[in-house]
Length: 464
Image 1 (cartoon, rainbow, N blue to C red):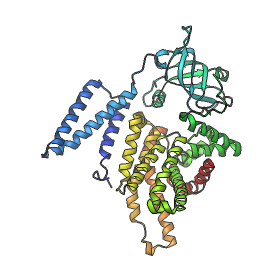
Image 2 (image 1 turned 30 degrees about the vertical axis):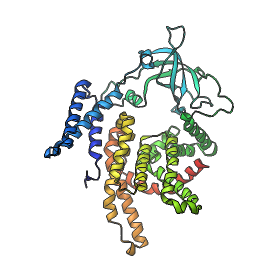
Image 3 (image 1 turned 90 degrees about the horizontal axis):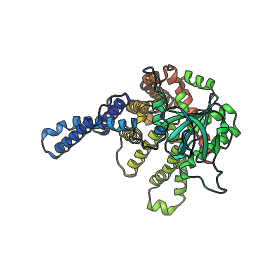
Image 4 (image 1 turned 180 degrees about the horizontal axis):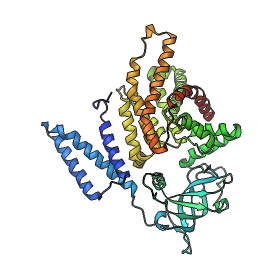
């Protein structure tokens, strides 16, 4: 069943914009000047058609779709080859060389497979040919072949001695493009550090000083991960770290292989189900508080006030999860849904999905080429399309028996899981070269335990 464009007016422009973005990522980006001229000409033509009161408006949609595809092509192209200032790190280090640099740690270091990776936002660099450091800018991904000592906190400044170079482009077409992956994270330079001793804090934080708002959530992530590893077995702590914070770096290769073979690796990524649980817990809590005030109940609708108060909690949790694409999709869709309820307006799930995709692509169009973005939106779109069919099978309330409810739950869950599997299977083969045919069944069996037991307990642990 194809979606109706009348109820989903943003869907065609989104698909056109996404097609242009994919074309840019694939390398089809000719000289930008003719494209800008074509986009301007189409925009002027669209405005003239809108001003006309004739049948010429029938040609408006094709023009708009072409315009959005050109905009997606040009906008994404500007991210693929961004104009760099002369002092940018990528311009100062065009080839491999040993340097000393200072910068701010923007994320918690990740230790996996015997290596530690950390990302610095650089501010100065000392080149081999220079006698004094000079100002610079840009992010660098540093790798150390050893675990780091404790005490590395996001937001703190460090002095590093490293060998820097530009990421290599793949020599074989179709293989993983590590340089493109780093560019999507705004990282254009990588580096290797010989020993953890070459990474030293510049100055300790002042006693009693508050962390910068930019790094507050990263610091909280760091503290909560330490809490998990202090109170749980290593494997359990790693699983909860993935489920609650979206960080799978601590999961052992054996557990990862087991989850991949069972087809439930996606359950270790933060998704809409996490935000649903957070929204449910916070809405119930605020509804309880609002119901304690007769004055508020007389003046304001309790349900709407509870929704408004719960959204900041959703935003904070999305930040705690690192604002990953699946989380941002769920957060934006939830926000649009809440706005529609607050203003008593009709809403469309596909339209909400299009709004979420547009917001993410406008912030970073290169995310369209990532597996996380593609799998998340493909699965959600498939579920939205199949839900009306499933809802039609719901037994009538007056004739509903416990057995009918259980049967409906099992059948609907299997169809939803199957729809998501069929939508994501080609993408999984493209990105990971493997799929699990047992995925729909194992997802149906594991999801209830995850949503009704594991997630609520873990989220309550975060809140307390």
